[in-house]
Image 1 (cartoon, rainbow, N blue to C red):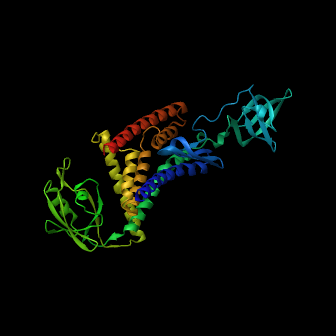
Image 2: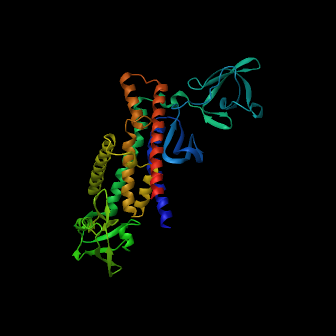
Image 3: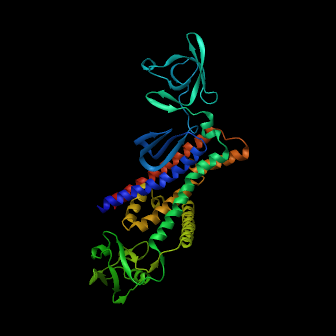
Length: 426
């Protein structure tokens, strides 16, 4: 049951941080009057799809992000050429549907050859009806129907490129911005859940035990209070305990713990950690620290400090990656992140809240990096447009983003392969 709960919480964490990011893009795009064709969570084949208003909401197979597809960002719809035969349905003197195929099956329509058509500016179509040209107005929300699919037309004023640089930049920046807002709120919730320490810890409890490690083999249990190690009182001094364990690699130790009100004596032999060159038993602590509920000002201050400290930590990790201090095997993708999230979920809602805040902050910062296909790169192109006074060639920009996206997908495949192999090898 706990495993199912952890899986549900892990999925929920990913869903929340990705959804809030895409909602930022979606909300400010709608406010600017841009037609949003799709709001998607995930990539690849559709698992679930529903259309509400002008937007189709989809859940896709690969849980590696999401996207908001705005009109004008990609090739819009199949073009209608002069001389082509189409069928149109008219309501209140305006064309509401344009059919491109299966014309003989359409009822209550006008079937004729196109003389001219403008779906972006004039919103008109001229048809040859009984040898005479007939001009019809097209509804700005008319649907183009082809191969069983309905696609709403996008007049120029509903397209992404028609908006000012400021409006487009805000629609793009709003995604990371929402991640920052979510991170701040979650850090604030975390301090409310845990409280502010009013003194030093006077007890150390076992918070987590790693399977297959000396602590698990010695029957140490989560919730045990560590009283003494080799006759030395531990109290709340976790650092002292770590030092004693580190100096006792491959040496038998006697632990006294308090479990359900009863004293239990255990024998544990720390294993040597080759990297740390110290003994370890495979536990994480949980402290008994006296706390109080923070006020509003303290909560805001803590959340701001947490944002600052975690931001510095994230940029330090980027720096290590650039300078080669990280190897590919050290990187983790969605699988590794999900694994860690599941482990943290088992520690309680407080730790999961803090971890979700960190993930949201990381997603916001990562998306602002000047990497093609990410929001940061798109903002750079908008900045160049503002300086030049005219946009970069859309075809060139699309090619840059496509190459960047392909490279990111290759990197993700590589780290995901490493994650899976790590799990297989245990």
